[in-house]
Length: 400
Image 1 (cartoon, rainbow, N blue to C red):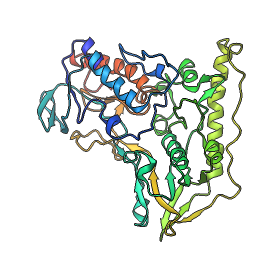
Image 2 (image 1 turned 90 degrees about the vertical axis):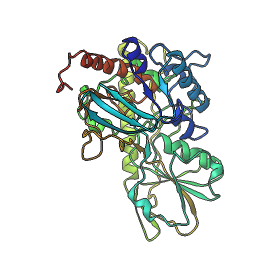
Image 3 (image 1 turned 45 degrees about the vertical axis):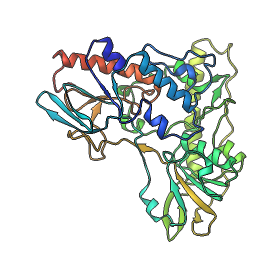
Image 4 (image 1 turned 90 degrees about the horizontal axis):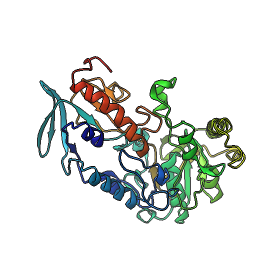
């Protein structure tokens, strides 16, 4: 967004509570790699310049990429400046920080969707002898006690942590809820290549039937690795991870799991099949069938006949619980009445229901790829168009 505003000669400042790429530097586990191939890190005026376009960036590489981008575009970043409140003013907005106040006609909220780890209320019933932590707190298996680990949540984060922790010698049980299974490589090309080429990632927020539901869809079960490996539930059970259903409750030290595991896995396989059908259709329509491998499908997710419905958390078998149950944004500093009853911002494709306020960086903001690095540029171009028109007086205050 800063690059797009600079191209329009719109005076602006970027306020950052820590250093550039702060979250990547302070809130990610050590072995994490981007889920998208290197070629897909495309930002306005900047992209991947190395010799491994199909690889997946490590955390140090992600940090260096963002640091370099800030330098290349000469972004006017004020680091170590924490915003404590944003409120309406006669001229637009008053932005209060721990290093002085700013007055602005427009404000872009670019704090992202992953500020606070979601931990279910039932976590309060976990026995005191069991250590609990979130992916924000997790760095590597060495920080965990020896003994069993229960990972709750089986989207991209949960499957990656289950894999790494189990390989460290700690037996892992994975509590599985809604998830979307996906092959890393399909018909010889990265799944992200297919989704990009076929236009899946460019699908717009105003083209889907239920955008509220679309924004809640779990992340694909993908991982970035030098082997370009598929990390799904079958891969995890293949190394000895035990699957149970969604964690439904904890009563007197006993965990209770839903009996819907088989159904959820079958639904996930169906969703994967629909995505691959879309890709196959696009490949045929565009004459690629002779250039790439033939269509294929992964074997169905294997689930034991009667998965356990309970587990005693007081017996010492489970020493740690990792809550891989998603994240939520933090708008505690926003003193403008734009939140709905669930604490979500009311907006239309990033145009917030307050004149001159915009939103960036949440799931499916304007396109299916909005939460990816590759999606930021297109969203920023659209929203900077709207912002510029607003500043020019060409947008009515009720226009969203």
